[in-house]
Image (tube, rainbow over all chains, first blue to last red; front, side, top):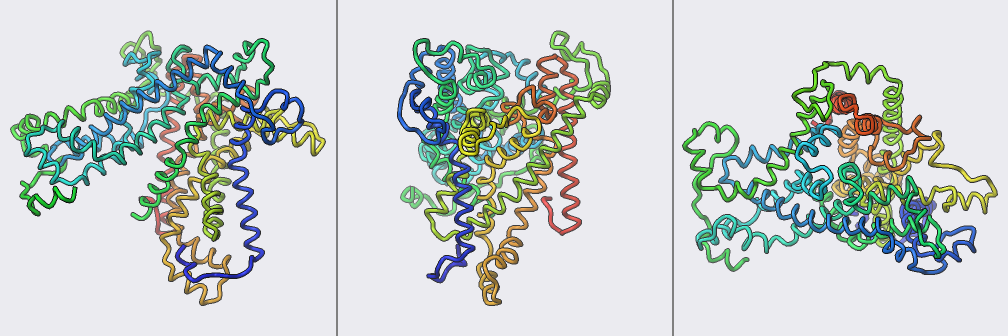
Length: 289
Length: 329
């Protein structure tokens, strides 16, 4: 904050107190709901019964997570989530990077028109039903590939990577070309290994999106291919899985749902510092321009 | 990297490369074939990406035609009869459509009315905070919801607002009142959606405004302080005008979403009991299209939305430009 350049040793004013308290309230309102779900997921059944208000976990148990592993639908769901995220992210990152690199090369006469091709779908879309029909028309309905192919090269990530590759030192590429490398070789052996920061960041963003995606997987695939997010939503709205829960184990459905949600949330929390840093930095850079 | 760059001559000669679409067209087929022959590996690299964007980015645009057909998947595109505006007429005369449109607009307006100022207020207040730890803690907490997808946000808020969730527990145990059914009460549903949307996005938009605030010239603050302005007056006369460009841009963009009330969010949070206030155009289209196989009708609704969105953005931009000489484009 440039305007506070001189040191300001003064007492707290009423305004300060108001601001700090309000922000503390905002902090609480933002973070507590997530904390609440996490605490429900680990709260033992006996503690749940004992207290009327469950504001924070009074015990710790992994029973609910064990139950997730016992449930076939959920286990399959998390397996699909993982598969979708790993396969989808790797394919996306690789193909987006290749596309972005190729379109960043100035000697391509079709380079500019092809880039514009990616620009328009960012603003114009056919809508729900037409997109659904397109997936159906290409025979992807109820296949694993429906979860991975349609968003393979997203325009936004493509443009970000293209800008990065466009700024890649031309001399290095020329040196490699002189040494006899073809376009593929230059990309894989020279550009890709030295572009780890941008690739890692894009992989993080794409991976997060894949992990948390709900809507299209819900519409396009059947129960065997549904990722955990879809199973979570069906548990929440129909409570169907709850009936089949842990015979002989005492649990509350709320905690079970919370455990499923927690398993989905935890990876996001784990990579959250990086996500936050990238997004904030991107915003700051974008606004300076 | 620096070493290898030093070895190469500082100014490599580059043949001028024609840029732009016109150059490509103007040169003639010989040059084009030469380009393909020389650069085919690069084109091959871009092929998967280009193919997918054409199929799934532009393909659906052709699918918009379904709005004018009496389409069934069995008959396919070619054999579905053309019905012109019939689908639109059916849609506009349906009471469900009217209700969905009303709900879409009301929810969007409420989201704008609540969320837009909230982000600005949050940014203004965060700007005043001197403790870096506190400031970064609040920023971290408020940005976290942004990264949760709606289904997870729904899981979180359904837990919190359930009849045996923490909010109702406090109401029952500490306030000794009856539990409130937040999610099944049509009167409350809209506000839940609005509040949840604010919860998700306020941190993100606040960062946008903070970035704009960082760009304000410190000399303006000093001049204000010299004139005796206190912090609130500085906020009003220096900070807010300083971020007005960002505010306008975001406002224009957000009005384009006036008929799009947040599909996935409503879809995961709503239930039949709140259709009267919670059913929006997209959810209606979804049910009509996929559950009742009324593809033409559903597509017509979607097309209607897109047209209105674009019109709104352009209209708002025009209006804003007229009144304040500033606009998005």
